[in-house]
Amino acid sequence: MFKRHKKDIAGWIIMAPSIILFVFFLWEPLLASVVMSFYSAKGIRLERFVGFQNYIEVVQHPDFKAAFFNTFLYTFWSLVIGFLVPIILAIIINEIIHFKGFFRVSVYLPNVIPGLAVAIMWLYIYRAGKTGLLNILLGKLGFPPQAWLTKSHLVIPLIVLFMTWRSAGATTLIYLARLQGIDPELYEAATIDGAGIWARLKYITLPQIYNLARTLLILQIIFVFQVLYEPLVLTNGGPNNASTTLMLLVYKYAFEKFDYPKAASISVIIALILLLLTTVYNRLVKVNEE
Image (cartoon, rainbow, N blue to C red; front, side, top):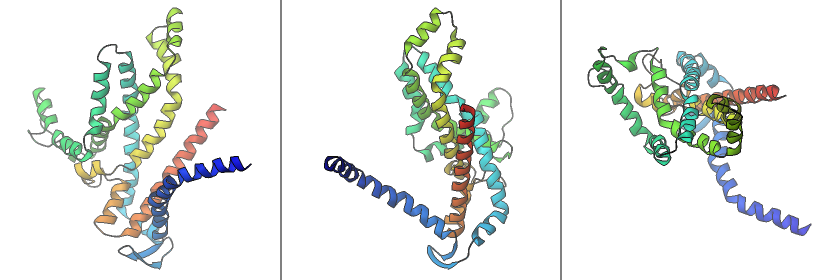
C-alpha cells in the first residue's frame, strides 16, 4: 500500500510544475475572461456586474453577424481547399522512391517562415495592378490585372489558399508518419491478389489513416475558427467586412476600442461554438460506428 502511494506521490511531484503552468497560463485567463464578460470595466479593472448585457450588445452589432458567417465560410473553404491537400501530398511522398527527404523538407519549409513574413509575401502575390505576382502570371495568359483582395466573393477562398500553403506541410508529415507505419505486408498481399493502386488506396491506405484524419479534421476546424492575423494583415477584415472573423472582432474590441468585456464576451461565444461543434461531431461519429 505504502509503495503504491509512494509511486503516486512521485508522479504528482513530477507533474506538478506542468500542472501549475497549465493552470496559470490557460485556466486562470480563461476563467478571468468568463468573469470579465459579465462586468463593465475601465481598462482591465472590473467595475459593475451587468449580466448578459455585453453579450446582447455584441450579438446585436452588425459586425458580429458578418464575422459569425464569415468564420463558418473560412471553415467551409478550409475543408474544401485544405483538408485533402496534406493527404494527397503524404501519399505522393510515401510512393516516391528517390529524393524523399528533399520533398519532406520542401513541404514543411513554409512552416518555419515567420507567419507575418508569409502574410506580407502573399500580400505582394495578390497585389492589385500590374506589379502583383498573380496578375503578372495571368497577364502572360492575356488576362487583365485584378484587385483580388477587393472582391468580396473571392477574398475568403484566397486567404484560405494562403493558409493552406502555410500550414499543409506540418499536417502532411503527420499523415506521412502514419502511412509509413502501415504494415508493408498488407500492400504485398494486395499486389499478389492483383489489386491496383486505386484498390490499395481504397481498401488499405484510407482505412488506415481514417482515425487520424478524423482527429485532424476537428483540429483544423478549431484552428480555422481562430483565424486572425491572415485577414488582419491582408485585408483588415475588408472589403466591407467580407473577410472579417470572430477573432478579428475580438482583436478590434480589445486593441482598437479597448473594450475588454465585449472582447471577452466574443471569446466565450467562440469557445462555446467550438465545444458544441466538437460534441456534435463526436456524437455523429459514435453513432456511425455503432
